[in-house]
Image (cartoon, rainbow, N blue to C red; front, side):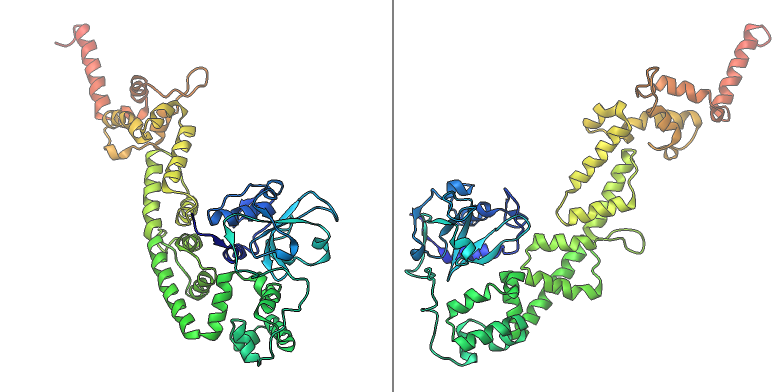
Length: 436
């Protein structure tokens, strides 16, 4: 049998997403969730499957009375006072608090479970199978009888709460709360419950709160982490071709630490700094992409602007598209520009391949080097974009192309033309008996 999951672990995981926008029908913990979507995804993270919607979730696990609630239990509410139908679900967080995705226009938050709005709409609670908690831990109470501790000094209380006294006094929001805790000799649970209602708690993720504490209480460790992150950022930026302004490096490193960014998230951030160097080229991996995409665009007879190349290089660096996606965009542009050759292009041919016979004929007849012609040369473009009598693009046959060249003024200037004309004249004179 799989080990039971602690309700505290469920809550701690869910609290990481405080601030996520409410999105009706949403199930993405980062971009948006609704109330039941939030619960489903929290449990899913720990391998526990529950239904998608509130009406089905209330049928899961075992019923729990209000006075027996434990952290991790699901609590259900109706839309109106005294209702029996569950229209909203949240997770009990202990000490009269709950984690919820409230409604459109608001964000995932910790809310007082005991406020009259919810108390009047409470429908029931369920404890999902596979979730456990220490006996009585976080149990609901509608009084503060058990929330008073023996009188301790402010320094001792701060330590009991898991914070440095200096840190609690460094933030005005926390200082005011801590002064209340000192006056009332709050227990750690009481302080934590009230702390979760502060702007400091709501505005910062778990990793941000940890980093901010460390920055204040252990600056040496924090500065070492900051230096290491700056080195990592510089290395990643160099590899992808991102130019990080000197004045931005420290703030980017701090953001990365506070947000606990993984490599993908850091790449997404640094990708926005991919830009041209003084010589008009991109560096690192972005430079390799620039060469690849411009070369392919030339082969496909498609124009691509520098800005477009930079934008796509940034998106690739950020993980929002791949170089294959960029190549496919070029290929589709070529099909639109040269519809007569869609089959060949879809088969893997480039317009350079398709235009090669025309370029060879032009080179031979006009006595010009092969390098004088490419897909975008007007003479070659005219052949590739030839339309039939119905206006449908068909391209020009090589025979027609050769005849069109022989009728052009440029051909008359060539040695080929002069030799051909002299040959015709000699033949005419022979036929008239004037030449042997």
